[in-house]
Image 1 (tube, rainbow, N blue to C red):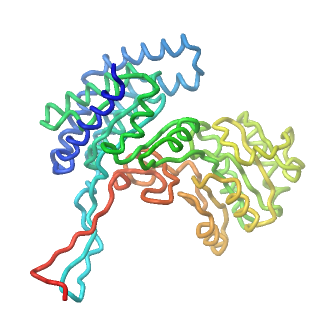
Image 2 (image 1 turned 45 degrees about the horizontal axis):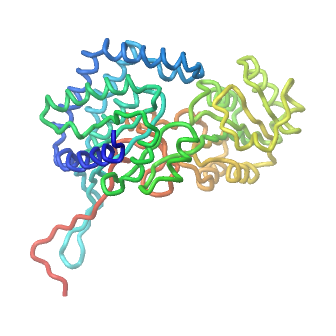
Image 3 (image 1 turned 180 degrees about the vertical axis):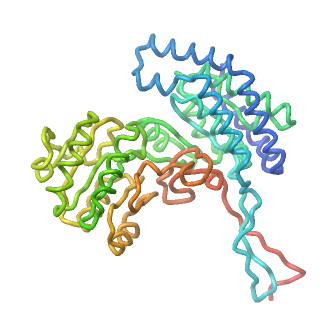
Length: 418
């Protein structure tokens, strides 16, 4: 295979298909989504067979159990994939929505219309369900997508991609709207992220190494986040039961997600009452606690935190805990060591809460709620294609609206500029 020719051809097909999907009405897109969901269910056994091949090869290569777990599909998981595509079909279509209309003194009316981005390149690891999720979100938002999954899920991705192609063909939409890269050659990623004539934006979804590489090498805009170093700050005016429940949930509800709390900050006035309790809860669940000197006084069997612990995304049952003098130090710590992903304050003090959400510069900032809510579904987006900590365009969970842009539209009745 001539890789450069192959990837360029994918880009050309995608660019041509983008015209068709951008012009498609909501009914057509929803019909295609329902057809994809039906095809996934109909070909469930084919997907499971392909996935069994992927997991077998992953085990032979000695991949970590956590990676194999993310890779593995079940009948229930495939049904959930199909259900998720069906739910996307029920979401409001952002394309063509006009907002902010205003009349100008000249007589013209000016507003903004939501339009698709165009062609999206999606690069992701492990989870084959992302193939269906990303395809559904891009299709509904009027975009074309080129999907390059990890080599460990190649067989699964190809079968899922074929299901999508079959469904698109049955609804008379170009199959080029969703293309799954067929080669596992790592250089395909380098080719995709430099196809600037054909691809409008790149979305990486995977480990820090993957995202760093793409951010560094891409010649196309990238929607991404690198780390999920999320904080919970327990303020001096916190309700202690809320603080215990939220801190526990933010850390232990699930360890391997980007919105899991990694650092707990506690006001010094609550150290002697709050820390022994949360320490007992976390220790009972097998969480390793790494604390500063002030916190370790109150938590049995805690380890001494090092400088690197304050910037670590553990993705594991490990937590860093620090006692702070107040809101100013908490905000400074988050600003210095955080990743602008998700941070929360626990407080009954309205002024402190307002300062926190105003001054903490993260894509999601929360008051009295678990960081685990930083998710497209929980935010009412229906689904998400990823989390963005970018300062431009989409920020936070990226759903359908985040996969569109806006253009100015002007309505006139013969007006001329004088």
